[in-house]
Length: 253
Ligand code: SAM
Image 1 (spheres, rainbow, N blue to C red):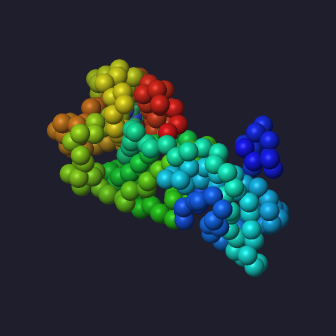
Image 2 (image 1 turned 30 degrees about the vertical axis):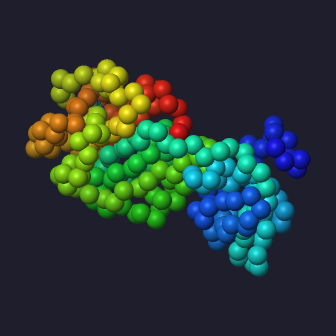
Image 3 (image 1 turned 90 degrees about the vertical axis):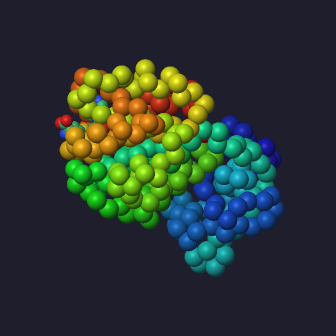
């Protein structure tokens, strides 16, 4: 730990993802948004301390160096946490939702350990497009806030059929299917310890009979129930992800 900050308060320092990569003693550029946030929102001067991370390099205590009015860089001073390779990928396949619900879904999915977000258009999806830039910013912000060291991946939007055609047969998909006689997710996941896995949730209007048949025909798909109550799509996503996070016993990657 640097002599500039005590261990008990290091978690109070701003924490930013730096895409350029990080090496002790070498300045790394911050984005204009990050520079603005540090200078004008948090009012941090040159030399202020912050935490910066990159999935391949780890997390560092760094000093801020403003460059002109709009730009800034960080200079890593000491390593706080070494990079940890992600040993289990956890995929979420979900229908795009309306604005607020989508915001909550993305933020919480990242907090709950999803490594791969797959927006999927179902027959009954009401929202049929995604705002890639907005979602990417939310993923980054949520990863910064929840102290992950990795950065979840946003996959391109695809319809259910093509997503299933491209899917690796080695990655089981726990597909939440409402109104069926399927084992509860808690029972079904017991075989996935330590392995990559996926969780699929349908749109607000539910999965059609045709889509259910498509899913049931795929070997890697395990249909699951979430219990007697019919949950809203975002509740079903977050409930299932919470169960997975607990049952798979990994906590945050
Ligand atoms: N409109 C549908 C209906 O009334 O049957 C409900 C769809 S639900 C709002 C959205 C998605 O959440 C479903 O497609 C399913 O993936 C998941 N879901 C909600 N409740 C569930 C349950 N009890 N069991 C399994 N999946 C559920």
